[in-house]
Amino acid sequence: MKRLTALFRVIVAIGLVLNLNDGFAKIWRVNNNGGVTADFTTLQAAHNGAASGDTVHLEGSPDSYGGLTCSKKLVIIGPGYYLGENPNTQAVALPAYVGSINFNVGSEGSVIMGCDFNGSAVSILCNDIVIKRNKFSQRNGATIDYYIGQINIYYQSNNSGISVNNVIISQNFGCEINNTSRAATGVLISNNYIGYNGHGGDGTTGTAANMHGNTVAIFQNNIFRRGRVIAYNSNFTNNIMLFGTFEGSGNLTANNIGAGTQFGNANGNQQNVDMSTVFLGAGSGISSDGAWKLKAGSPGIGAGFGSTAGNVIDCGMYGGAFPYVLSGMPPIPSVYFFENQPVGSNADPIDVNIKVKSNN
Image 1 (cartoon, rainbow, N blue to C red):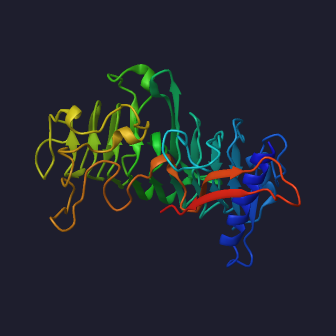
Image 2: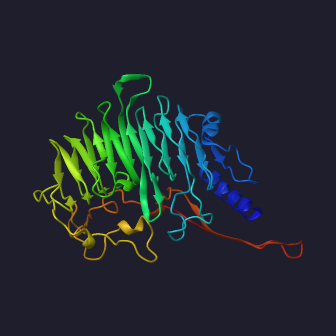
Image 3: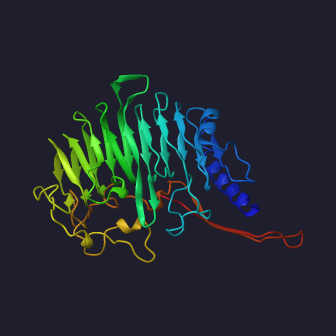
């Protein structure tokens, strides 16, 4: 435990250095591990004690930090997920589990990243929210997405007659996206692994993504694993759909790949593609999210909209302008190696070795 405590202090020191340029915003530590002293032990308590514009760091733990009703502008950062499956992620290979979160009016401009919802949901009830680099799925046995958490786009929390605007959902793993109660504007959904619960099998008729008839959204470089995708007057480019259906009307589709005839074969779309030729797939040394990289010779390589010899654009969640990041690593430095001498003295001080890397 002393080793973990020392490591958490190193992580916080790095975070404080990063925050020196902001004379007002504050970084708050949230840690519920025994023997570790932090500012808070739950996400809701951190929110209640923070001011708008502050950053909340959730540190790795086997226990959940609970849910949140958010009414302040916060940046919420966890350490990522699948940390033990991918190399050089975090020295403490524990995610930050969170429960269901509501972003209410007052939390405009908030960002949440690097967290593990483990089947829980996010509800967006205000403008200007960014949901990125989080895991929503929950494993059961060999099925990595037996349960899938939802990202729900609703309406203003203080007035159900007002739509929400400007929502970015990007680089998330194992999420279902719903926007059926009221039309939204400015919705970007890119580089996600999207699907319906795996416990229903690949033939499920559950909805992986369901958009309001008056919502105009951009779906770009996603993987649709299973379930129905329903949208209207929206833009679909560079996506890959395995099992499931594509429904709606007025959509613009280009350079998508389907295992069936979901997107047809016009406008650069490919249909009836053998998915065993597309992805790297599971195997020794391949992580749960790394399995969805394109394999050598994949028909998705260079098949994205606007791809040229000098600017190759791939289909799928690892392609495009905002490629998926393994383990959902947040774009801040991480300590991925920590080693300290267990005992020391005045003659032989304790040696500490750390390795730190930046993340895009």
